[in-house]
Image 1 (cartoon, rainbow, N blue to C red):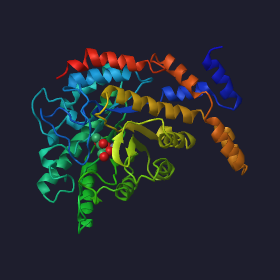
Image 2: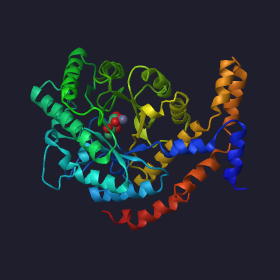
Image 3: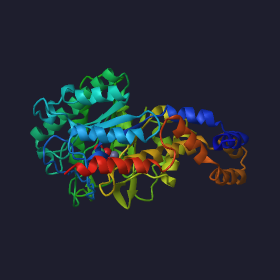
Length: 415
Ligand code: RNT
Ligand code: ZN
């Protein structure tokens, strides 16, 4: 018997259907963030410098220097990740080969080559306005800027991006999530915490009032606890955006790196989904601060996926990734993080759900705890390998060799 057949029988014996799990896995896309490929640089200008309170540390050689290189790297990463996924593109990855246009005037024209690329590759696409790394964001303020002209520039960028999101969705035949995250905040204690929040609410109201088909473009807002240079105050806090999303029935974006280190994103899911229609996740790994480390198959990520499965929330959740590590091979970072996310989802799908629910309903917490622990040593690896085999991707560490080969034949040739 091959290992998968043995595993399937073992799971069946505890009431788990591995085939059903593999089907769900194959039909749950992960939105792969373009920004791991070049340290959140983008290609708008030749000398783009990342700001906005986020940082990609490390200088591993071979980062993508152009849209073509980034696509080639994404291609390599996707070939080593099982399943059909999506591309999550930031506006600062605009294709400006048709001429320089500023962010407030972006249209689908600056992103058409990306949409075409996604179409060829069979990928869905999600989108993000970029409220950082731009001269008008140099003081760390965008939608809350006291200068009305600057604020208006960023409002126009937001509206432009929602329209682009809808057009992307139309062309690819799949709704696109357009996620708003802004860096606005302050390094030291502000005297006035209220006025910037009033401005943010008003700016968002203008952005979301623009007529855009909400069946095509799904609006999301992302909160944050603090960033580099916004240690004392972030305008778009958790309370601010959760309330805003509930009031306006938008998607709420939970980023795993945006809470106090002892808080768990997983526990927020079933609360938030009581009151917002859909959820966007930025699966990440915070280490002490919002450090955006590569996602691993760790307890917090497993707990997130367990919540999505246990609550029946997969159909209302968009799973996106958000990490950027420049200290290791960037393609490997994508592959490790995405494979780990998928593995966590698989583990959640293979929980002995019926038995756990029954034990809990009977008040048998002894059995519940025992089953949770026993489940951990079930043959998950054999099911994972079978999934990879069916998806024509390596099921083991042999993908590393492929990345190393690509590194020596392609990446090492980059200056
Ligand atoms: C920053 C937010 C945001 C960004 C990306 C690049 O703290 O997490 O999502 O990481 O938009
Ligand atoms: Zn994020």
